[in-house]
Amino acid sequence: MFKLVSRNTLKSDILKIYDNEREKVLKITDKNGSRMAITTDMWTSSNKKRGFMVITAHFIDHTWTLQSRVLRFVYVPSPHMKDVLAEVFVNCFLEWNIDRKLSTIIVEYYSTNDVMIRLLLNKLDTSSLMLGGFMLHMRCAAHILNLIVQDGLSLIGDGIERIRDSVIYCSGSPKRRQKFEENARQLRVQCTKELVLDCKTRWNSTYLMLSTALIYKDIFLRLAKRETSYTCLPHDYD
Image (cartoon, rainbow, N blue to C red; front, side):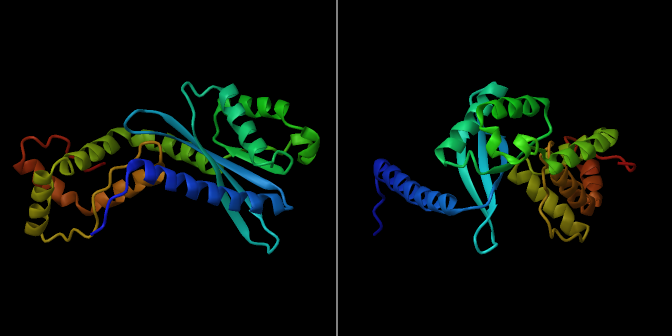
């Protein structure tokens, strides 16, 4: 019978694996002769609302193969000030000995990041950067596209909110999910896809939520007639 190891043993094993993998990546980055593009992203934990940042390096190795390696996943205390973020980047670059191998740093399109990059340039040896660091700052195209789409979605924000509330309602409990499936069977609508609740800041997840909800529009209409607690039926023009 399997014997569960202790918490301390598990922690020790995880740290050993991390150290071994880190050494492997360090050897790769040390041998790498090409420049590295840096990308970053931030998340907020759902339980304690703590901010975390990931820093990833992308480069072409000696076999002309694109490589991507996560260099750091770190807790960033709030508020996420420009000087704090700049310090996180500098410490990461020095730790991995890549401060003279940088090509670009791709960050989201926020004014805070503009100032942060300027602070970062003051901490780096710009003579080792392309064009003295002129090319270092790259704004994330995906984030800019997201801002454009979000601006367009704001025109139909009320309709999206009703659909979002409908998804929350139908997925809110096992009993409601069961009623949803029962109405689907009665209407002979096949539940081939799960209802999707979007992340408001990511337009592609909103698109997925809308396209999935559209399949079940007749079910929402039927629920509105039968369930008095369901009051967020999307309108026809939504």
